[in-house]
Length: 360
Image 1 (cartoon, rainbow, N blue to C red):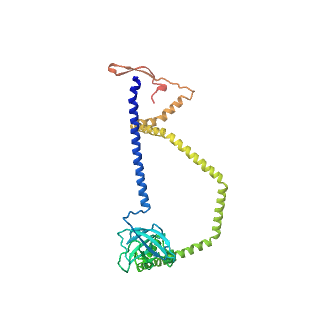
Image 2 (image 1 turned 45 degrees about the horizontal axis):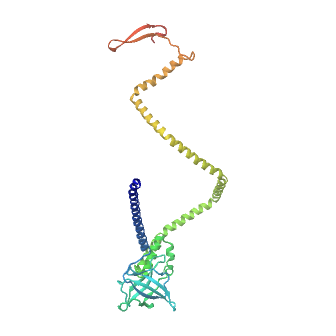
């Protein structure tokens, strides 16, 4: 009975450790899911253009045309977003009923006008609330801005259509700039029509100043075309030769493909060879540096050796002309002995000073 009793505490401690690990994992998972939910909510708020307003008030405006206006488009007062379009419906008399919400801080009066304006040049719209002449009595939530105090969006095609000949001569950035200024001028948001016309006149004057340059370019093109016309035979031959070349390349496309493939394979082989030879080459270069250092340190001896080697090789060659052996003739036999104090002592055993051993 002692064995089971002693094992029970170990199991309980093991269960406690497992539960602690599970709680830690659950806490981390909960934190991760919370962060993900907050990030998702922030993304939906930003891209959904959500607005948090206190007790937003609802109003109605009647239009003859709201082309391009959509549910969810912004309501702006002096460029500040104060609400959204909540509903668009068509009345029985073919007018359009637009319901929108506005922040309580935005005060609408009986003189307030509602205008559909362009938000950008690609068709975006927003509803602008502007002050106009009329009573200053505040509109109550749910009241309607009548058709007489609303204005639909401009027809961008009709506005810019008269300027198309000018736009064709401009760069895209200049076209966008002028179109934006023109649209803002007609909507009463930007410069006046006079300033726009002054800008257009400046652009036209710039084009007129370049008339001489354009004329010179046209004259040069005429000369070039005349030269090409006078060389039509050579040009025809060049085109024919180019066609033959292209046809020949097309017929040999298989060979060209194989050549490119072989070149690619050879490049890979050379790369592998260079990789394999990198370490031996580095070692050889290091050893060559060491040899050069030794040679430079004893260059006098090496120079003397290089000067005497040819003569010595000639003498060795003469010794070997009788066969694959060398014959030597002793002129002197001298013994070198160690003398007193380690000094060398030379003892001449035999010698001859005539014949081959005669001094030169």
